[in-house]
Amino acid sequence: MSSRELWVILIGGLLVTYATRLSFIAFLPPERMPGWFRRGLRYVPPAVLAALIIPELLMPAGSFDLSLGNERLLAGALAWLVAWRTHSTWLTIAVGMLSLWFLSQP
Amino acid sequence: MQDRSAARSAFLEGVLAQLPILLGVVPFGVIFGALARSAGIPPVEAQGFSILIFAGSAQFIAAGLVAEATPAAVVVLTILVVNLRHMLYSATMAPYFQSLPTRWKIALAWLLTDEAFAVGSLHYRRTQGPARHWFFLGTGLTLWGSWQVSTLVGIALGAWIPGSWMLDFALPLTFMALLIPALDGRPTQASALAAAAFSIALTGLPYRLGLLLAALLAVGVGVALEQIRPPGERTSG
Image 1 (cartoon, rainbow over the protein chains, first blue to last red):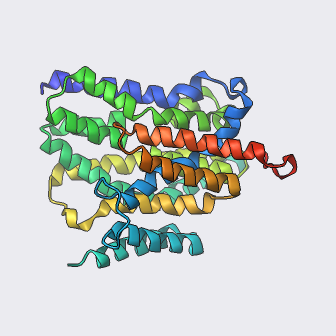
Image 2: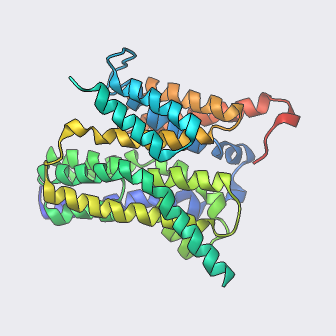
Image 3: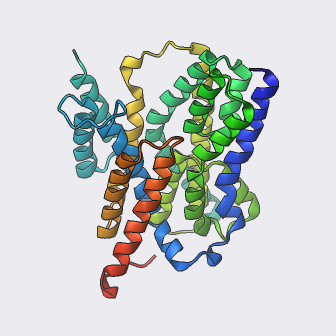
């Protein structure tokens, strides 16, 4: 691919990405948003997080895997317990990664 | 001055809140740098992706398309579709940023990535006070800086990082640590559960559209449950 084409992608990618981020913040003041819309926004962060996490645990290889051979599901379940009991980000990551490495040993 | 010290401590708090997330983000930056080089993108342009576009999933997908010599217009359109979910983040942050000066809106919108949104929106949800935009700035700049450095490392190291380390798993783990304390109240829990179910059901959709759609449907579940509860129990906000 030519350098010119790459720069079209870089500048175009910059513009479209920034447009999505700026969209509501710059152009649609919250007082013009309907009430149900504003109430719904409260649910966005937990919903997005759940939708980011769960496929990584249940479908690590791209297809649904609930078996005991799914190390990411087991490690994720342990990390879930730790997160729930401790609310500690560091501990959650440490337990999750260590369990994954341990479970993946041949 | 009181204001300045409040701003400084909020900024530092934002930096600190982002540090654990970097465990998940830095490996991704390194992998992106390496991947971009192997896709035939020269070092300056590879770094340019991280400096200018600053959006992990979109950068990975774009690098993949570049490797297949996809026309530039198609790549840009794909980046747009992959990043449509940022509109949802933008709508969520808009009420919080409403009273800020324009230069702040321009800066904070620039930093509105998945990870900054995850940390920043939960901070706004949990806390009050006039210095919260400094928190968001601290968290966003930390992320931007480490994304640049890790991309650079990846460009330099190439494919040296072994896949057997499975460092990509650190990102869902950090998201988990953020999600669980935020599951306050039945409608929120039901909404998160619905998001999980929809995200599985919709994984077949391309360009991360599944994430966008799952989040939208789950928000609908939360709002609907809020409606059918007796008014006295309804949480405000």
